[in-house]
Amino acid sequence: MIFILRHGERADNCGPEEFNKIECLHDPHLTEFGKIQAQAAGKTLQSFIQESYEKGYLETRNPQIVMVSSPFLRCIQTASHILDTFEPKDIYQGSIFIDEGVSEYLGKEFYDKDPLDELYIRTRSKEDIRKYTKYNLVDGFLEFQIYSSKATYPENHETFFRRVQEGYRNIVEHFNNNINKDKTKVLVILTHGLGTKGMLSCHLENQICRKTDYTCISQVRYNPLSKGNGTILRELYRDHLDLIDIKEKTVLVA
Image 1 (spheres, rainbow, N blue to C red):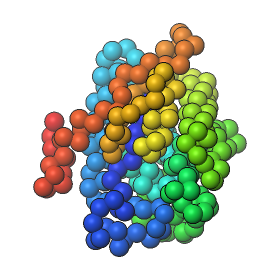
Image 2: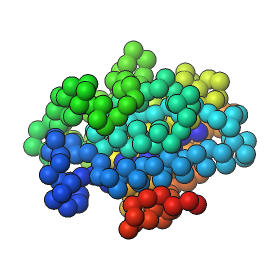
Image 3: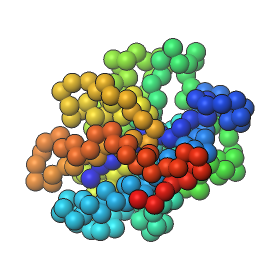
Image 4: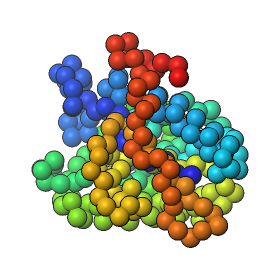
């Protein structure tokens, strides 16, 4: 079972109070509301996992969560707050696997130079990084800690979608053939809006035009008896966002 999520609300897309807290201008953190969105997404993932078990898609009620994230801080934070909703024993290796293959679109219209080497997690101390995540960050997901595909600045939309699709396929193949041989794990990929569309396009004939809301969830099932590309069970699900009390900024009980 595979889940694809976009990150939560980013600090440079709201008011000056949050914007002024940004430590790396091209690598903004999550807002407080973005953290709540991630918590709501985590609780929703738990219900989807239980549903999948009851339908016979999973062989265990409490699978381990294998978390793969873009190296951008907003994705790592979203992954962290999602994992916080699970028991520590259910988090594979207690880690978040960082993979450039599912990172942000590196177009010149967004960046005037390559941002990857200047990301927060690559320029700050371990103590600084601990302010944003308590989980072990493993650089690379495939064997020997390599990336699923290489992100190279500058990209255009064609090269970006090719990179994300290659990365997604390599991550899924490694997960299915190596990590999840015992069928007791679930893969969660934390990416960006365009990254979500790129990955889903591996399963759909047409490019996705619908909006990718913050922390929207897509779910893909791979039948172990089939060699197909998987079946989309949910596409850009966002109903969990309706469980958030906007005024109080808390997650309501479903």
